[in-house]
Amino acid sequence: MSPGRGLQPQMSCDYLGSLLQLILQKKEGSNKLCLRRALPRVESRWQRIPGEHIDYCGYAVLPMAVEQDVLIAVEPVKTHTLQLANTNSLYLDFTTRADNIQIDKTKPQWHNYFLCGFKGIQEHFGLSKLTGMNCLVDGTIPPSSGLSSSSALVCCAGLVTLTVLGMNLSKAKLIEFSPLRATDVKLPGGAVFVIANSCVEMNKAATSHFNIRVMECRLAAKLLAKYKSLQWEKILQLGEVQASLGVGLEEMLAITEDALHPEPYSPEEVCSSLGISLQELRTQILNPNTQDVLTFKLYQRAKHVYSEAARVLRFKKICEEAPDNVVQLLGELMNQSHVSCRDMYECSCPELDQLVDICRTFGAEGSRLTGAGWGGCTVSIVPVDKLPSFLANVHGAYYQRGRRSLAPEKPNLFATKPGGGAMVFLEA
Image 1 (cartoon, rainbow, N blue to C red):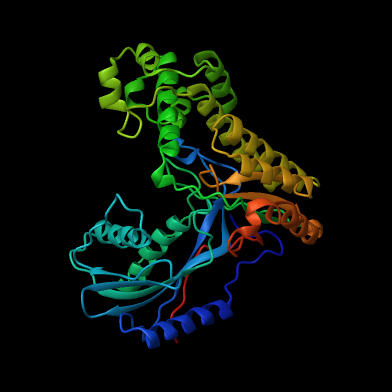
Image 2: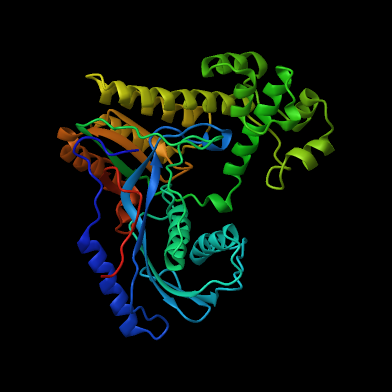
């Protein structure tokens, strides 16, 4: 999303200077990492305002690049050694051969995310040998907060690799899928977005919640396709059902009401509806993470996806029309989105719900969870004139009560504005 009136993306020179100072300290204190010519690279997190859990169903989302970022300083070296270090001492140094990248998928260690970006560039361009690099990683995105610090690291690593190789990829904001299209949406003036961390960490890689939701959406798409006499075997996404029928989102919500029931489906009922055996379901449709699931909530997941897709389009239209009550209208859509995430997609948690209520109580026109859910952060739209009191009241009501007051110091509550996405800074 493009910045609105008075919200211009910027990068703090002081921040970059601080990072380079950390590099020098690392150089002086360790023989493992020596950065003489730094090429800083920044990647901002694209955070969705509405549009949760619908991209993998084939629908458009409305992301905004926030100011918080991941930054990597890198020096190319003549050897084929890849050395990674982190300014956070919790993340250990890592060294490997650049021409023999092996990623242990069973252990979500921080350096694996860098290796994914590095290896992705290698495979995309068919490169057999890559130059070695010394890299130092820093960031201001709270980890395990639903702001995709890991995704930002993957993207940043890939872009750093491209920079070192002197190569480029075409730039695009991932907004619409199949085909990929990007459209700028101007946010209204007079309001800011505030991120609040629930302090509940959710490791998506260590749980099955996300994988089950993805499969429930796929099963819902297949049952809806079968109900409308489509070739359901080829259907993978709820968006494909709508595209095949050539109807609007409101019509898809009506079809969902007719075709699916609110009660959970057993694997046996899914098989009966599709006319397949349990063995075929497990081997041809389900994946290893979902083969032992006993019930699937297909009605609820489809209702969320189609209604959330409609909210994205409504959000965009309101921004374009910019009525006098634009902030209020956008806030209402964000509130509806959270209710749907909580009740239909069931990806919220008590702490997120409490935090959303507190944010609304103290002046947010709208508030919702952001990211995968089950923990992490909320995003709220707050009138500019209410921001100081909003921050103070939310801090007192949520962070100074209970065990959250004992949480380590980190950016749990902060206002943000649209950032520049990704930038390269070269040493003069």
